[in-house]
Length: 426
Image (cartoon, rainbow, N blue to C red):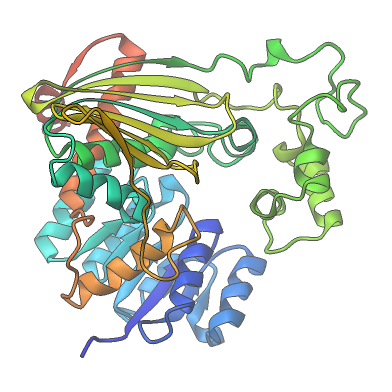
């Protein structure tokens, strides 16, 4: 009989709450027994949801982990730069870990986490949620089953979406590399990971180009004030008007992030627009991460892969995989024709609708719940899928991202074997 798992939550922001919500939906499989979160409103929301006693609620992770191992799983969903210390402390306590991506914005810290986990026999699952979606599971199965033959080349787009870019990567937590991490790592390590998983081979070389092209102070329209609410003459036509995004349209997770509260009122959101960067003109923030980037990768057996991340679109992911027997198109946001295959021999196109487990319908196209289910099965020894990656695989895929950023900054083509070897001397 499978064991019910207990979990502690370190970081109760959007991702920590999402993961815990899915655990709440699986009461026979999970019980959340403690939380560490510095923001009272967020911490109290989890306290009430799971009836966590006062002595198991903390404003910092250190006193929580100082209790010793009080649960089976530690969910670490702090900000990017704050992953390393709690992860290492949890490993030393022999917690199995669900760690939000990226592992760390520092490649050496990534290596240290992987080495410590391997030494202590700790299982770490990184929140690469795309692996656990029914959508990409179907794409992977079609490749594995040989429907398009051997993969020769892949083009993949992550369309971030102009509004999402403005919220998260200009005004928000991840707009400035010094506060969080660079764009390709924070937003697109999902995609680099899924590409390596689909190709199923080792990356050999990386090249990259990209920049912060548009969301810059010199591109602000004439007469635009520092804050949208200070009477901007372009407010009606600007797609980044904060009152439109945070008040009139009421994007729920936009509002929560801006106010740093769960389900904030309009007045609480307006206070954030008056006092924080979420209210600033989108061209006048302290952002420095790129708003478009392309990465060229050469994998073993001369498989070529092109990845493009761009802010200037509605949003969605598109994948075109070309093989020796056919080609596959996958559009994550296209409900009518999400996955199509053209067969060279029959000259016919076939659509492949995808279905997943009951309930895997929300949160990254079902990936969030799929990941939580996979973690439960992994730790109970019953997982039979092919989506799981161990910490070493996840870190190696992170290194592709680190190498791509080095390539973008230097203009060089990075040899992955040489890059990995260079880390051993740091």
